[in-house]
Length: 255
Length: 257
Image: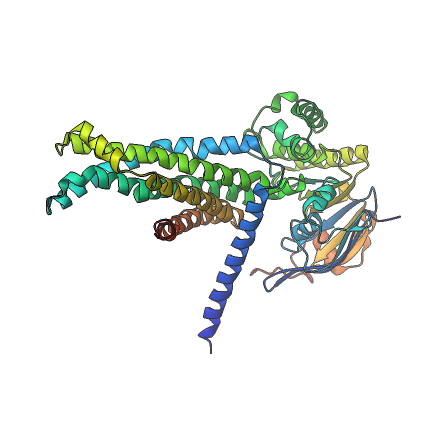
């Protein structure tokens, strides 16, 4: 089976700082992969390389078996129509209303008329547990948890084949975090989408992942099914999932 | 040996900046000619950049015209040339002061607003979000502002010209003892189409500079609130300097004969 997404030896550095040092990662169709790792280990950079927001210095990225590493312009827009993304701070457009945010990809990306797009937006909002009454509000009137839900509705609005979640639970209280985790699991199961999430929240990772990969110093140091994470035998993974200050991972206080 | 390292670094940073700005300008300008064109955004930006700048541009033009009339009268007095007030006011306003004042005021107002808005969108990942929704942020954000600024600046300057001359007229007739009808006749008789047109050409270039500097600095802002603040300052400072530099170049080209 052709992997949905494949990264081969992807490298990226900013000036002298090496962020990705040869990432190899495979996502099978319908799979939910969670990449864990501390702050600043290159999780976001990995996602941004796949989306083409950043260009890798070396290595190749494939989506549905087709190389997309240096895709630009129309070709990239077509590729991006397969994707939905939930940003860490939701990244809602504050100049637009909630429903216009959700319908943005439909109206701007796909040229759908406003009226049907609005109906779909309200359906998607209902899917993430938000009523039609929030549709006309501005994103700044919503709480953090609600913004995340709107962000999720926007990510799934065009029924994408692949969804990326960037720290979906960061900054939320534990209950809202669980609500978001459930929403992710449910909506993804409904849609049969392939997902790649990045997080350092282990509760969230265990809940949404089929497989977990751990990123450390720009490399994937462990990759396996979620159930094996507790018996990985990898001291780095053990330190991370138990949140210990002592261990092989030394916190670099200075960047 | 060590003294060369910082010089080299500064040169590299400068060259990288110029390269980035050139690429940004190219993609923005080429975006003007490639669909989709966001007409609704152009109209919106036209209102924000042009229409809402009218009060500040009008007021500054009025007072500048008044001060100009006063200075020409006082200066001309030394040579018995005080009757040339209307001619020199209209020349100064249409050729230089109208475009410059409108350019600098709009740079302060609009370049700052654009940089702050786009900079905030950058640091809150809204620009990345546009990309993932298959929308080119250059075409969606930059092109409408560029078009709106290039169109609205000449209109603003035309209005500034009229109000500036009016400022001179008010001061001249109210305090310097000129007769209204003769002042206006001297103004109109002396003024040429080229005086006005040269100012409007300049205005279009200034509009381009203002929108480009606002967008460029906003697009490349880093970090949080502080980064956006720096981007805003850089946008206004760089737009103002470039306007004055471009003004000199344009004056020397337009009046070279």
